[in-house]
Image (cartoon, rainbow, N blue to C red; front, side):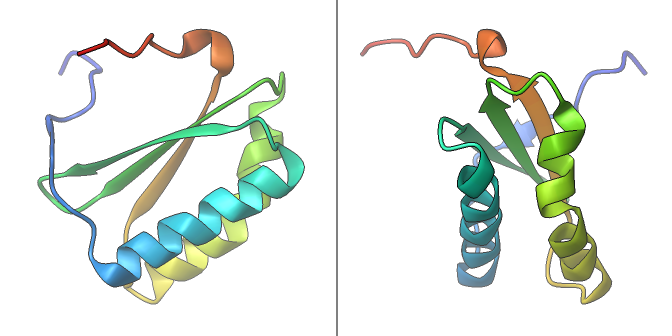
Length: 96
């Protein structure tokens, strides 16, 4: 194991998953309006929500979403992993 994420495929979200992700994004943006997001779905249906913000404290973002992500997992609605990152980690979008 190299420590890399498993291969992430372009798998679409279900309506329920999309609503949950939108709710989590809203929770984050209430405290971090500058936040940007990247959503990926793995072949095993795990959802990876990367949150890019200017926050120096990753736990501040986790605190905003922890209760809801645990609730979603317990109810079996989705397996969502929220990964805070600093905006300086954003990869430039390729034009084209």
